[in-house]
Length: 637
Ligand code: COA
Ligand code: AMP
View (cartoon, protein in one colour):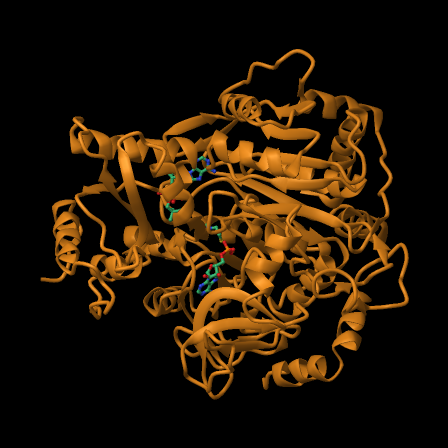
């Protein structure tokens, strides 16, 4: 089949507003405005100003009203607890109304923020949809973050309530959430009025009289009463959620997602990019704490009338590297979306893909990868094993949906290894040099998107208009800066080469080395420090911290290194995967005092590097290489 991609992309270029107006007809609006886009509102314009809608209505009610009440909406598959459950659209709607009723009874109203701190259980999706139903703004915090990170988000989002579960479960350990929440609430200057807790049998939480409530019990009461809660009509431009993501400092960025444009973009992507029909089963093996979980575990599949999978497990070890194939065959999944690291983990355990043969994957059509670079080796292995198209696609928390990909729904384009393919409609992706000049094909530079950003992308940062402007719009006027570097070839294929800031990507998780440095610097023995991301076969990158100690410190270096590892785990959380701290005498710097992190990374990654002309003392690079070697990192001679 010839792809309709070129014609579709051109139709967007010819008439961007008409393109998105047509896409908007797939959404049910309570009020259609006169204008599709207002260039004068917000930082770069706003989509669907004056339009009104409700995201929960579009995800649930309209499917029930149109005869799909019995269709499975959400399947919970939890190999880590041995549990499974399936909720039809009607059952999910009932539970979401019950939870929305509880929220209303607790005084939560339109525009209030609600933090959701939950593992991969159905109630996490219900909580998001319940907030959407009443016009409250949710902010999901990933369970692998520590109390201090939660406290930062509480202070920034100033929520009225926290919705939580009593625990999360990782292989070999139960993580009690309530002590983490209590510590975060204690640390935060903003005070929380209500904490609603789903009690799980693995660790039942003690509830504080007055503030804490058993959410499961309250929902049961609402369900027994058949509580109905109307969908609150909100402006298309009102925030649906705030999702915090790593910035270059310890203060995370609160990415704001609006209601209207988000629905339009996700609905468009389900058929045109992912090639999925309503009624089919779509599985994003991510976590609701990440953007992939927001867009493609919860909102995208439900907007499209699909069945989504909530998977509480890991690609390996729950119980083995065949679990993905089991879930795909058992629930007739047509398309899987995950991070390449999951496939690297599976391949490591089952290099010949023997476990795949144990399952019937005849319904399975495609695998989508994102979140980090999809190395051709892993992509080729997956293609050989699964015999389906493997689609790498590139996006960010900020965009909320794919910026560059291979649109299966429009007809698959030829694949070039290492490239996520071509821009989606809405994205005019360009490569600029540092001074903002366009670069010719095949030349490495800053990847930018010509403004305006399409529907679904962030309009701003929560409580931080100026930071939004400074971080994304100021450096290249008229463009959105992605902070990725790459090239576009003569056929318009993009390749992502690296980040241009100090963000690293660990197992598909986005982390800030700057934030880790801030934590290391709080250790009383540390005079100065630097954190870099070094290449790792499984997780893509792993953080590695270097610390110079203050004069006169008597504690052993091994002890301090262990304390630094512990400190990052305590302050940022286990998700940082910070396991390597190295004490050194000096850090390599330029004569003006800038730490040469890039050169340190090149040494650790065994890449050839040019001696920086401005280096203060080249001998320090040898000291770094030696220190890495002593800690088991092989470096070139
Ligand atoms: N709550 C608490 N702790 C968590 C957690 C959560 N929700 N998620 C991860 N952690 C912990 C892990 O248990 C681990 O702890 P440890 O240091 O005690 O072992 C640590 O955080 C690091 O986790 P992770 O980097 O995920 O490593 P892992 O060894 O547990 O698993 C993979 C490795 C590859 C199997 C896993 O990273 C994976 O499935 N990745 C898929 C990527 C993905 O979903 N990306 C999302 C964007 S699409
Ligand atoms: P996040 O906001 O967590 O989704 O991380 C976004 C960042 O992950 C991007 O800016 C890229 O650096 C990286 N990334 C995401 N998808 C890809 C991809 N397909 N190829 C290469 N890098 C990617």
